[in-house]
Length: 159
Image (cartoon, rainbow, N blue to C red; front, side, top):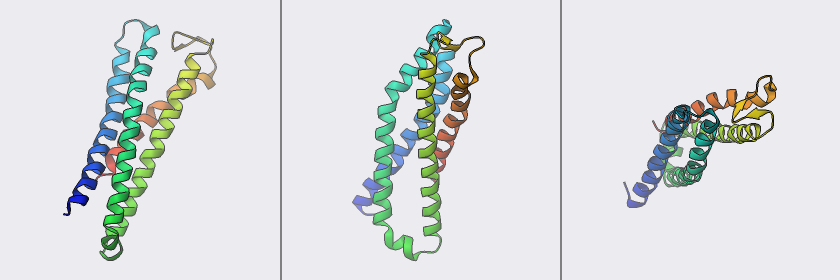
């Protein structure tokens, strides 16, 4: 393996680990840890603050991972074209990466909707007020599967 390919592979794999690990830590640690806060009004604030600190790191990791993936694809273009099964595997990995990107984007979007919903007068301290609209509660229910899909798909893109 050439030195350039080693660097690209390191960028690809190390940053994928950061992306996957961050998704897992967020779903289990940030959100789960916030549930241990005794004051219910502070739970949402704790989770939101943790995600706000992690988001720039995750975005950088995803960008570096994509740079590594593009570089590996370019470096191995001849092998992808000529070796049996390599093109199919490359397409499969790219599809899983696109799925992970989509799940990450949806999860972030739902988190932003959650933050906006909690800031509304309809909610008291981050907890949906009694009789609050289902439209305001829906992002919270949808964000759990999106967070899980994020970790699952980013962890699957490395065979």
